[in-house]
Length: 334
Image (tube, rainbow, N blue to C red; front, side, top):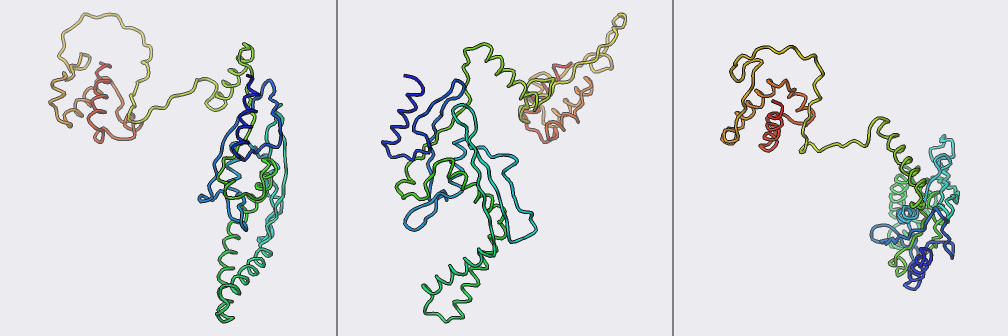
């Protein structure tokens, strides 16, 4: 069974189960380098993915955006923008241009405009709340009804004015998404509770071709170099708890001629240094362990201040496990 047939059968099964199929085409035709992928999205009325309109529900911008992520919708970086000059504080015009990928890899774009006129919105809010006042507050005096209307209109209008840019952008993008995703204007509650099936096309070239594999590796390396530079592979950043400081290699110096060995006591300059053995270390207090670490670090010329800066804490604040790890690392440098 080919991949195409398997996906078509899966979509047909979703249709039988009553799922919301968000694809405008009736037949999927994948190309050699692109394959269809199916995602299921469950929307929630309680979480704000849909809002009630009359006796049914319409998808909110939040719900549409969840579907758009699964569908792989891309927004045009230059054409998706505010289109008015911004001189009128009560007016915002926004244009959104979004696209989805076809089976051949090309993009299908759709554009929509949205105008937000706060003066008109204020008039609509007044009509809306006067209608409510006459219906639910008909027993109250006219001045009380007017106070109620003024309070509600001022509250809602101030909120819309504060978020006018976001409202204009979401309005334009919502219009684009309804067209691209083949979304209905209204759904019943039972339909909202069904999964939304989204189909998108992903780049999937045949990897059995050595040349294609080589190109994919080159593109991956080029993308990595564009982020991390041209001289190194992907770096590893250890957690502070697992940090083990590794000193840089010593610079090459000319080896002096051998001199006759003279016995020296441990700890003297130029001589060896005997660190605590394990039994002594286990019996030592924390202050004694820190003193031993400082003694060894001074002997091997290790910069403890630099280590503390990289670790993000001083030696005095480290726990016993970290102190012992540092002790063992320093002993290996003797």
